[in-house]
Each structure stands twice: as C-alpha cells, then as structure tokens.
Image (cartoon, rainbow, N blue to C red; front, top):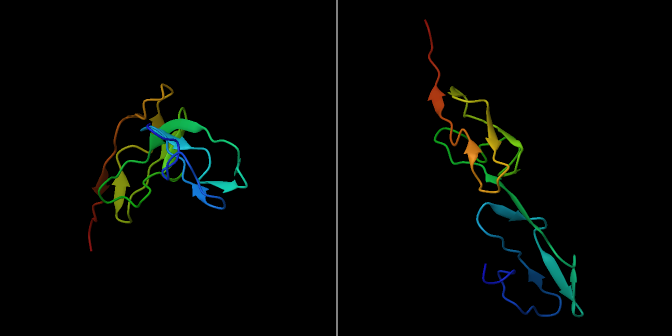
Length: 115
C-alpha cells in the first residue's frame, strides 16, 4: 500500500488514523489516535485471512464468524430462512491469498412437500 493510514502520513493532534492493509488482510485495530506526537496504540498489524463472500439469499456477513475469517480458520456458512447452503463450512487458506476452499457456496431454495 502507498500509505498505512487512510488519512495520510501526517496526523493532527487528537485525530485518528484508519489503518489500511493489502487485499486479503485486515488491520488488527480499527483506529489509532494521535495524542501529543504519539499514536495509541503505537502500531498495528495486517492479519491475513478471507473476507466473507457475498452470496445470493445469504445474510451479510455470510459467515457466522463475521465479515473476516483469519487464515486457517473456518467460515460457518449461513442462508436466509427457506434456503439451505451447499456447504456447511468454508476453510480459509493458510497461504495468505484470501481464498476459501471451496471458493463459494450456494443458498438453494428449500422444497415444500404437501400443503
């Protein structure tokens, strides 16, 4: 990335930095505050993982674990009422490439039998 904070390289006193990471990484904190020349917390890490996929007929986020799943962890898939998922779990790759296995799942409409 070109800069670690959305706001740029220099922050005013009592302002915040919104940390940025490369694709398939998420910051370890949501913000850092500048106070008298010091950041709090002092730094952040970019954690590799997978972002929950956008799936038709699934709530957002589509993973029970949330919108971000750390590498090597699983996503428990979700569907809207009346739909069932083609896979119960997706595994986030340990390679830091942001890819689930399987890559996607489907929410298929359930059938009603009788009336």
